[in-house]
Structures are given as C-alpha cells and as structure tokens.
Image 1 (cartoon, one colour):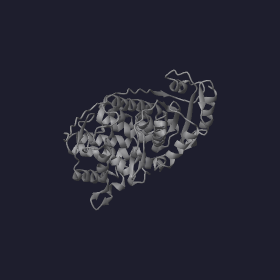
Image 2: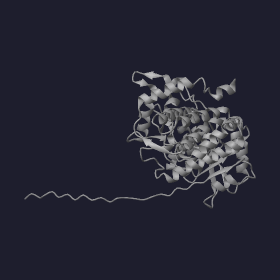
Image 3: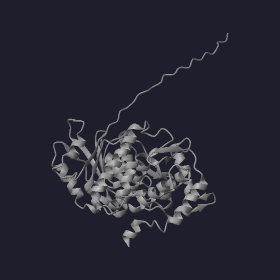
Image 4: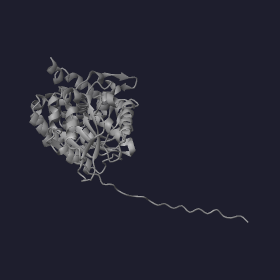
Length: 404
C-alpha cells in the first residue's frame, strides 16, 4: 500500500520593538575637571560600577588642542572611583582617509580587543564626521556593539553626522558603502572645539543647515540668509544657534519619520546628496563633504525651479545665501563626461542602489517643505550644470577669496 504524502505549512510570526533613547548635550570645555557632564553622560543609567572607556581622537583635534590627551587623562584620574581610562587615547587620522578601506577599522577593533572591552564599555570618540563614522562602525562590530559616546568637534559633525544613528566607511568606490545603524549612548556637542576650526570645516556644516532648512523650515532658511555674513566671518554666537537648530531638526526627523533605520527607499534629509556623494568620490575626497553638499543643493534647487516647485527668486536666494556663508556652488568636475553623458549622473544610480527600490530624491516644494520625486530628467540636470557654469565667475568660493 502507498501512503499519501501530506503537507501542512505553518508560520509563527515573530514581532517585537526596541526603544532607543540617547541624550544630545550642548556644553563647553567638556574635559575641564570641574565640568561633570561627561561623567553624568556615562553614568546616566545610574549603574553601580567603574565605567571603562577607550578614547579615540581625530588627529586634527590633537593638532589644534595639543593638551587634549593630558586633559583627558586628568579628567579620568580625578574620578578613579567611577571612571577608568583603558589605555592611552588612540589618535586616528582625520578626514575621509580614515574611512577608506578596512585598515583603520581592523586596527581599532584589535585595540578594543586588546583592552578587553566588553559590551558595557565605552568608546568615546572626539572628531569630525569621518572619524565618528569609522570609529562608530568598528565599535558596533565588536561584541555586536559597544557603547558609543560621540564628541563631535566640527560644525558638520555637531549639527548632522554626529547626532544621528548611522556610521560607516567608504568601499567599492562609494561613500558609506559599508556601515551599520548603531544609535549612540550619548552625544556631547562641545562648542569650544569650533573656535579652532579652519575655514573649510567651519563653513562645511553650514551647508547641512541650509539643506534641512530648505526642505523643512523656511524661517530657519531666512535666518541663515540673514546671518550668512556673520557665519562666514566666524561669529560664534550665530554658529552656536545654527548648530542647535540644525541638530534639533535632524533629531526630530529621526524620531518622527517612522523610518529611523531607513528600511524604505526614501532618505528625505539627503536633499542635494546624490550629486554631493558622487562629486566627493570624483575628487578623491579632496572636496569637503559640506562643500560638495552645497554644490548638490545648487543643482537640485535649479531642478526644483525648472519644475516650478520653487521660484527663480527662491533659487537665487539659495545660491546667494550659500555664497555669502562661504560655500561653493560650482566645481569644474561637474563638466566631466563619460561615453554615457555627464559623469555626475552616475550619482543617481548609486544613490538608488544605496537605498534600494525606486529612485527617491527629495526636492523643495515649496521652499521650507519637500516632496519626493522618483525620476530625474538628465536634460534638466545638464541644464543645471550649464547654468551654474555661467554663474561661476559671479559666485566665486568665499574660501578662495579668504585665502588670497
């Protein structure tokens, strides 16, 4: 006798949610022994233990703050009953080079392993966005994630890169091709670090403020345009206001967007970034991220104007605001071509691949609000490049003028 094969398919759907919470502090002189904020941030869960921490420092911070390593040691030594410094502070090369390939990631993971860091240990990272990205990525891999405490030291890191939940490194010819989502344990924005920034790092973060203001907050945009000359001329109060407002807008978006880990195919806070990421790669990352974003904003703002999402007056005000704040709206590599057309257009393909699904690009519609478009007309992008080329002599980079 033959038996009939029977089949019964069942499914058990597993579902759970995980709450994340992290504070973003604003202060000055974080490593002054009489400033308790760093310890309070580390001990915010009121755990009864000595907290071990490894400190990683951007080489640029060491150059401009020669006493920083000693200051860190003295801060920990002043609190031996609660804090333990795991080894000497580790100095990492600043800028995009720290994110190029696996070498620095492996070195940092090896150092963390050699110090026997556990999942309750801290990796405190001081530096610009690139160092924060790489160190956060390495820390997220060790024991499936150590506690990350970020101390951003540039404008761009304090108002954008350092307050979010992403990290990564560059690989496969693409920016942030490899990375993880790893919310920090805490973020401390120390305004005293901004005073020693060079012109490029001072102005770079201004582009991210324009980006979020153009698509989310027209009042903030008008404020940026009004304060543009103050910002270019290193007015500390104007910059601190910009950092706070921009950081809060980014944090609000992460909290309320419904997609903090970007499972969807849209990334609204990357207005201007499809061209910026490609242009950075085309320059071998010699062009700063903020400067590339400024140029990307100029391209996408022209596109939005031609699609009648914003007016010509709005477009011109955006370009004038960026220029007055010390940012470029042109780079000669925008004219670079392959057999398929403008090389910059490959940034659209890479942008779509990074997120998956259909192409989704955020544009202002109208100024202070946004919409998502799912296709970009190459002809209009060519037109944008031609328009910006015509305007390049008028909108000379204030950075170039500053160096004359």
